[in-house]
Structure formats: C-alpha cells, structure tokens
Image 1 (cartoon, helix red, strand yellow):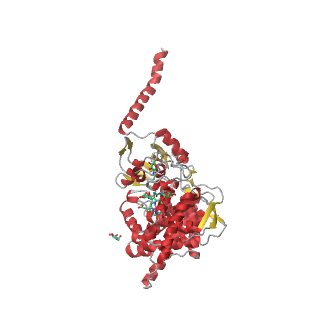
Image 2: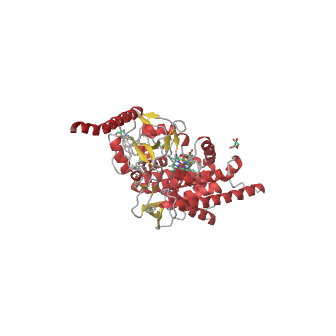
Image 3: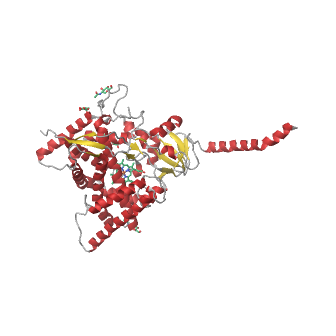
Length: 496
Ligand code: HEM
Ligand SMILES: *[C@@H]1O[C@H](CO)[C@@H](O)[C@H](O)[C@H]1NC(C)=O
Ligand SMILES: *[C@@H]1O[C@H](CO)[C@@H](O)[C@H](O)[C@H]1NC(C)=O
Ligand SMILES: *[C@@H]1O[C@H](CO)[C@@H](O)[C@H](O)[C@H]1NC(C)=O
Ligand SMILES: *[C@@H]1O[C@H](CO)[C@@H](O)[C@H](O)[C@H]1NC(C)=O
C-alpha cells in the first residue's frame, strides 16, 4: 500500500506545519507588529539603511520601505529588532515618554567613543544631573550677555579672514567658528593658540571614528579615534589639573567663566565624569551647528529673494544701532531677526542635521493599533516628518516664507493655490530638529544664536556663490563631500 506509506512520510511534516501555524497565530495574537522585513541574520537591513543619500531627501531605503509598509515598520538594524517610525505622532509620543515607556539607547560603539558618562548615552538620575550642569552653562542669562558677545567675536574672527575672490571650504570655515567658540567657552582656550590647534587636529581624527563603522581593528578609523579619545582626555585632564592648582594658589581668574570652572566649583563629579562631559559637549556643540551653518550657506544662493530680505532685515538693525552709537549686537537686536529665524527653521527642516534618534521600548507599548514589544529598538526618524508632503507643502523646496504667517511668497516657483505655504499649526508642532521631551537639545538656543549672528555678518559683508558642484549627503551624519567650496566677494551695503 504505497498510499499509506506516503501518509506516514508526510505526517510528521504536517504536524510540525500545524504546530508552526499555531505558534505564529499565538504570537500574532499577542503582538500586532507593524509590517516589514527582518533581512539577513545579524546585519539585517543595516547596510541599506546606512547607504548615503541626498540630505534633502529621506533616502531610497526609507522611501521604499515607507511606500511598501507605511510610516511605521519593523526591521533589523544595528543588530537589533527595530521599529522605525516616520510618523509625526509616534515620534512625539516616543520623545515625550522618555524614561517611562522608552529610553535613550545609542549603540555600544557610541558609548565606547564618547565615554560611558557622556550625556548622549546616560539615562536616569545621572543623565538629569549632567543635564542640569549643561543647562546652567547654556542658560538664557548667559546667552543674553556672555555667549552672545562670544558668538559675535568668533564670527567676526572667521569672517575677517575671508579674502576677496578666494575659493575655500565653507564647511571648514563653519567648523573653525564653532570649534573656537566651544573651546573658548568650555576650557578658555584661545583661537589660533598652538594648544587649540593641536586639540582641533586630534579632534578631527576623533570625529572620523565616531561616524565610522565600529571595528576595533588595527588601522581602522574607529581604532584611531579611540586613541584620539585618550589623547584628548589627557589634554583635558591636564587643563583641569592646571585649573585646580591655580585655584589652590588663590589665583582666581575672573575671566575664566567657562564650563570647566563651573563644574569644578559647583559639582562633585569625578574626574572621569568631567572628562566625558566636556568631550561630549565639545562634540554635541561643534559638529551640529557647524553643519547647520554650512547648510544655510548652501541653500541661500539658490534663493536670492531670501538673501535680499535678510539683507534688509539686518541693515535695518545696523541702521538703528548707528543712531545709538553702539556697535556690538545685543539681545534686542537678536530679537529683531524675525525673518532670519524663518531662514534658520527652514534650513533645519530641509537639511536635517540630526536625522534620527536611538531609543528602546521599556515596556510593551501599543500605538496606533501596532505593538512595540519591550526591549525592541525604536528609531524616531525626525527627518522623515520634516520632509513629509502631507505636513509641508513642496517639502524639497527651500522656502523660508512658509514659516511666516500670511505670506505667500515662495522662492522661484509660483505659490500653489490649493495649499497655503505657511505650515499649519499642527505641522510646526511636528517640527523637531532638536528632538524633544526630557532630552531636548540643551544647546538649541545657542545653535540658533550662532546661526543668526553668523548670517547677520555674512549677508551684510559678503556675497558668495558655490565654486564647485557640491551637495549635502546624509551618511547619515550630514556632510559635504567636497567641503562646500565657495567663492566670496565683498558686499558693501548702503548704510544710509
Ligand atoms: C543645529 C544645531 C544642533 C542640532 C540640530 C542639535 C540636535 C540635537 C538633538 C536632536 C538632540 C537629542 C538627542 C536625543 O534625544 O537622543 C540633541 C541633544 C543635545 N545637544 Fe544638540 N543640537 C545642536 C546644537 C547643539 C549645541 C550648540 C549644543 C551645545 C553646546 C548642543 C548640546 C546638546 C546636548 C548637551 C544634548 C544632550 C541633551 C540631553 O541628553 O539631555 N547641541 N541635540
Ligand atoms: C555629591 O555627592 C554626594 C554623595 O556622593 C551626593 O549625595 C550629592 O548629591 C552630590 N552633590 C552634587 C551637587 O552633585
Ligand atoms: C521655528 O521653529 C520653532 C520650533 O522649533 C517654533 O517654535 C518657532 O515658532 C519657529 N519660528 C518661526 C519664525 O516660525
Ligand atoms: C512677505 O514676503 C515678502 C518677500 O519679499 C516681503 O516683502 C513681505 O513684506 C512679506 N509680507 C509679510 C506680511 O510679512
Ligand atoms: C495667500 O494665498 C491664499 C490662497 O491662495 C489667499 O487666500 C491669501 O489671501 C493669500 N495671502 C496673502 C497675504 O497674499
């Protein structure tokens, strides 16, 4: 009876198939996971996710996944089961439930290089303590007086070296500006001083490792960066010891109103903690705002009307100051930079300096009918929301006027009649270039101030054009492969 033989042959596989479906069903009943695929074992879809793409887009990977699965999908990224969210509501929900339903969770390699006491990786009470120190250093009171003056000084220092008709890297110039500013305000290091230049050089190596594949093998960028990290830490430690010695000798220097002084006086952090705090602030405060300034320099020449309107706004400020005889910008002047703030918002929206954040679920969370299981990684992709055509009309367009109420001016194209160009109340609600919730960027106000003051002196004194074709890429950190070469000409404004 060959037929019954067949039945015996197939029975075990039949049974296991049924068992398999029961298990799947069980799992399904427990969790309604978002759609998506997990890709290859271990690497999952990480390689596709990290493939470089134009910074003013969400990239091919996101685009494909979003059209196939929707704004919330599952994947396997950085070696972990992950929920990716391009959903404005879910992103906000994740950030606002930090510490309750979700928690900051950067890959181990980031902690290895920024340090285990870095603010980016700390959670809970320790994070809160470090955050209080940073907010103190970046407080509104300090911004209004001390930091505003510093920002202007360092802007002029960089812009004054811009020679007529020369071609240079706008990205490097922006980096010089933000590095000098941070080094001065964190450790009272003077721009151009050999010590500062040495630290800057070491820091470049360090940065290359932060953004590289975390392979701790001889010769890799990551290994070199770990070495740079220890060189930089030794350097900061030396500064710290000098400072402690000075204080002991009673030689208090009133000019040293910097972060190091504040931390030594007002906190009881260990040396190791102070070193990581200083290194992570140098990192957080330098890389991001320099990219943001480079992006503004990149976007503006494509929109001459915006440059024109910026010039009018800043000329007006200078005119008013002329009457009072005061030269330096003050807080009232800064508050008058209304259109400049639109340009800043639009630069951050379109350029997306920080594209996504790393979180993990602390509990099983249900959102919009989907389950996010406890322990899964969650990536809120803030860039995808800023480029969502249902929230921002013509999202790929640099249009600062969309931030201005009741204004239909756009750059280059005629305004569309069906869609108002100003964002609706809800869309500006979903604009989160600095993250949100208890981990909202501690330096967001400083970053805006840096951009505004830099733009002020830039548009008043210079004309510039892109000297070579270059483009902002997301690696996913935003970078100009050629360094954004620009050619500069002097611009003389009619002051009367
Ligand atoms: C345009 C410039 C900047 C952008 C786009 C930016 C963006 C961000 C984002 C998105 C976060 C949240 C990270 C997370 O939730 O995982 C963050 C955190 C942070 N940023 Fe910025 N940032 C900028 C400039 C600065 C500056 C100038 C500083 C100051 C020195 C700074 C200091 C920090 C610090 C200390 C944190 C950690 C906050 C915390 O964990 O509580 N940032 N930044
Ligand atoms: C200093 O350390 C002690 C004990 O470790 C702690 O209780 C206290 O809160 C700390 N103070 C500050 C300002 O961090
Ligand atoms: C820029 O964006 C911020 C949100 O980050 C918003 O509060 C502010 O009103 C915006 N500025 C303008 C001029 O629209
Ligand atoms: C709208 O933008 C144009 C840009 O050229 C500007 O001249 C005008 O004053 C703006 N109108 C309002 C209401 O802000
Ligand atoms: C902007 O466009 C809308 C719709 O086209 C129109 O109703 C509105 O009056 C315009 N606003 C201004 C300030 O021109």
